[in-house]
Length: 390
Image (cartoon, rainbow, N blue to C red; front, side, top):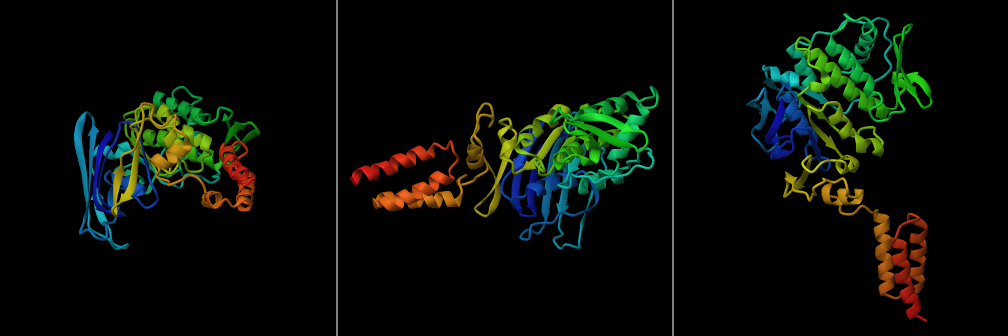
């Protein structure tokens, strides 16, 4: 399944918005309050059932969401109408098609606490109402540890798990090293069912990994596990999953180095999936291909998609300052303090106030980055008024 177009009218803070999507990675960015999370929820609720938490725009009599998508080589539409605005009143959504299994959504809660496994249980059932709830509230990470340990224990026996389950388990082990190859799976301790990870500092418990590691692993493990649970009878390998994966705030908990890698890691691990993600990270945008970025902005009181400059190679050769200003809409990447000092320095130059200009230059000289080329320009400007007063 691949989503080709989303058409929203009167939903949340969005009056009218139409977005088209590429078949693999789609990165939605923009300032807070432009509806990035609303877009993900609108898509997810279109493949769910039961009570919808979506709300219409306060100025609209109703909201309409239309999803155009391809599934099994055919064009489809999923539509929902939202009339409720009050917090304790809900509309109903019901998508009965098998397409609900092809959508997985991750909300912003992607860290997991320590869980002791006193015993290993069988895989849970995943009837359609369970998938509906998962598609509305986000993936439940509660079964992940049990699933991994279960596969580890049974992988020792040739006939205990099928070839797809075995391939998925091997893929899960690879995920520990996906962002940093100095970390890798060590073992499952037989006496405690604990997952142990080799790190540069030594062997640690799975739950002792950093929040960034947990955020990445929770996404990758949950995709593998959800595909296995939802398509058990069809035996769909996770690498072959051709559905839609929604992720809110993809950069959550990640250092900028990992932010620059995460999109490529996900598409390499799940090459047939379509990702629609939101971000505030210039590092994620900088690593994107030309057709992957969707920029939202508030213009004339309405939320619109903004056309952005790009190049043959996307933003890979852009500086972060260029991404922040030309893509993310920042007026200036320098601090207000710096801008005020520069303005005061220029004013002192215009007045030929040698003493004040010298004072401000000294302050700038002490606060600028050691290799900042602005220092040379400021020094030349200061020298000019010093020479003129001689």
